[in-house]
Length: 157
Image (cartoon, rainbow, N blue to C red; front, top):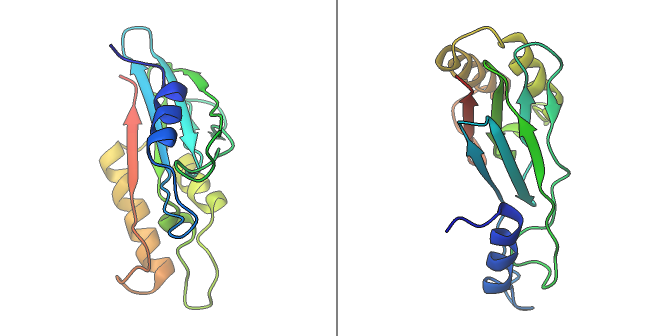
């Protein structure tokens, strides 16, 4: 049986409580996508908000972040729903992308990522991902990154 994302994250939060000494926790985005109805339900737990890029229209951030799993014992988690149309895209990324610094210590930023996603909306996903990788390397000035660089892209067919 599949349970809804908010309940799944609440259960994880109960099982992975941080103790006062270690304060270990993790962030995540968990969701379910029904490809027949084109409906998605997402829950965030301290993770950067996914970017929804409709085939036509302005990209938008989904959700406000929520609390990381294990941080607060009674944290509540919200669900956000998306109804996809053909060609709509969803991007889930790590903060290693948006917090990637250049030689002047400037951050790549969510705004810069969204602008790249919007400019590349008509590119095939593979080409868009290569373009973003190239932009990050140029921004950084070399290929050594301080944090993980992760970007998951989905397109509704």
